[in-house]
Every structure is written in C-alpha cells, then in structure tokens.
Image 1 (cartoon, rainbow, N blue to C red):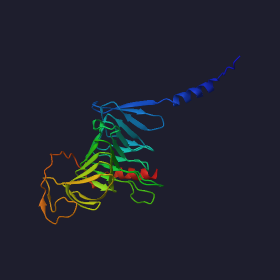
Image 2 (spheres, one colour):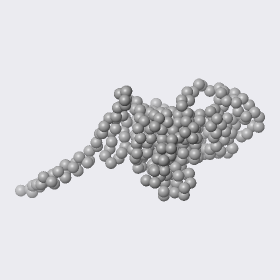
Image 3 (cartoon, rainbow, N blue to C red):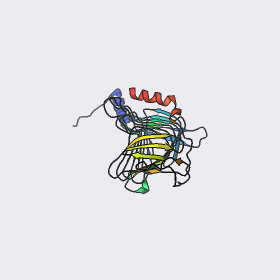
Image 4 (cartoon, one colour):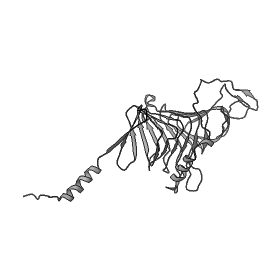
Length: 304
C-alpha cells in the first residue's frame, strides 16, 4: 500500500505560503485627482518592476525609490516633480515596441552600475514598431558604481526609434575611480536623437546606422562638438562614432551664427541659411533649476 503523506495544520500552511509566493501579484491602481488617468501596477514579487502594457496614456508626478517601469505599446508621461530611482539590474524606465515617453520636468536616476537610466527601444526589426520620446527638462542620470563603470544616462536603440531633446540634464554615471565614465547619450541600430537644447555631462556615442543631430550654431573638431543652442545654452561634448554612426550639425533660421555649422571652422561669419520646421520647445529647464531633491537622490542612490 503506497505511503500517504499527512501534513499537520502548520505544515500545510507553510506549503500554501510557498505556493502563493510563486504567483505574480497585481497591486493597486492609482487614479489622479481628476480621475482622468489610471496607472496600473503589475508587480512581480520581489522585482519592484511596474509593467505598463495596455495601450493607454499613463501620467505620474509621484516619487518612486528602487522602482522601475517596463513600458510596451503604451505612453508614459513624467510630469513636474516625478522622480524614479531604479531597481537593481534595471533601468529607471525601459520602453519597447511602439512606446512613447514624454518628460516634462522630473528626475530619473538609474541606480545600478551597468544599465542606462532610460532605455528607448524598438524591440522589433521594423520602423512600424519604433518608440519615441520628447524630453523638455529635468534630469536623466546614470547610476554611480563602486566597483565598475558608471551607468549611461539615455540609451536609444532600434529601427526608426527617435528622441527629441528640448532641454534637461543628461549625466553619465560616476565609476569606481570617481570619474564620469557613463555616457550621457548612446544611440544604436538605426535610431536617431534630435537635440535642440540641454546640458550633457559625459561623452556621447552613436553607432550602427544611427544619427545624432544638433540644432544651432556648432563646430566640430575631430570628435568634439562645441557651440550654442537657440536658447543660448552652451555645448561642449565629445561624440564618438562607430559602425557608420553619424553626427549632423543643423543651423536654424531663428539664430544668427558667427560661423556656419561645419566639420571644420570656416572663418567666415554667416546667418544660418537653412530654416527648420516650427518646433514646440515646451517649458525648457536650465541645469541650474534642477531641484535639490534630484541631486540629493543621486547621492543617496550612489551610497545605497
């Protein structure tokens, strides 16, 4: 006769607890004061990752510590005051496959050493599933590493994926030697980043079939781009190119340049000859206006 395993009530309770721990939990739904949006959190137990995959538009100005967002086929808007400090092994926000990110003014800090603060991906091999971002202010900052290379700030990747940057601070993470080793911007695999203003601390990198476009009065000496955006913000950044990656310098009709945007100095003053389509710059935030709370969050993330 086969043996029968009998459980005491306490043992049965322990088994039930183990079974429950193996199941994903779905937590609460957040609704704003006007009841005009919901932010559904589908959390994997012990992962602290919020999954947004319903095709809706989600808006938040909340502060999240050791929480990350995984966005798919959905729009996420981070409003003034919103801050995200990423969970371990995750970027603060990862957007894939036909997703959109709009950042008004918030701090997004990547708290892990080798993943970007924000990842904007296609996830497929067609422009039809490209993702998009419009960033107007705030700060996107790579995490500090105590034993490796600091995290990158903004990673844009995949066919047709495009980011427009109208302002804000992009800062690569600090490495183990207290040097800024993370990249401020990295663009790969037929994506593009259009930069109309902003402050960039840390080098940039543009790779396979991709392009970084600067709008304003700029000159390029080797890998170094210097000059001024339309709003007067100064730029001095190193942009490394790999595998046919490109850097483009585009003059705008609203700005008079001392020298024409060029791969080398021309020595001849010129008025920018090439008009560009009208662009809504939104509310641009200068780096000096980045809140003290964001910088404090960066320090706390580096110490944790």
